[in-house]
Length: 250
Image (cartoon, rainbow, N blue to C red; front, side):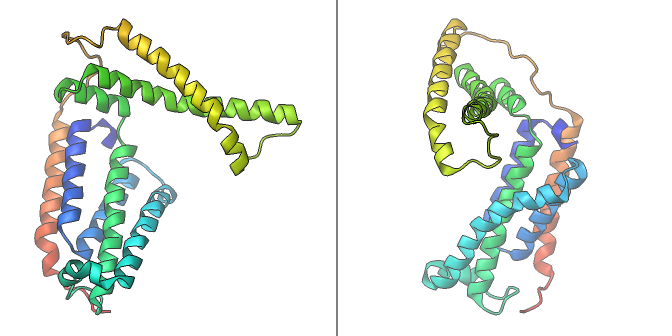
């Protein structure tokens, strides 16, 4: 369902939620944002709980850095500790650190929600059609989208060729030395592709400001308005209702 929402509407909603996560220094709001993003991925996008937990892991590691820094260097988080007074933890430093930890996960989950439910090509076409994105920049982005899977395929071919030469199957996980050995061939492949892309851009006249048509532009539908209104309403409810809910002191 989320994949059918217009990418511009979706990015506006996600940016609004991320701004709210930055502006509202409340553990309840951050935790509610995490749960809402996870529920949307699992219920509306049919993502597995294991995938959702895996998505949280890197943002949790990033948030642990905020938590430990806040606990060790108290003087660097004076404002955060002042705002966090009266929250769930008796220690303002711990309360502020936990809030920063949850904020990192919340912002990461909102960004992951947008990335997993949005077609990059549709997003670029919408930017070109409605936001004035330059055709040259749009074509370059399309070239990058095509380059990434081609780089992965080229790396697999190189690894298979080297494994056949050694007479044994390739390792499932690359060793550091093997990864370093792939750097130069993949760089040469990317440079060759960049040259071909530049020639293709010149052949299409992308250096001139000419009126152009854009195929398969994502339309705006009623479901986009319903999605935006629902997200804004839910955000408003959280902002108004959560301050009145007391937190237990730990």
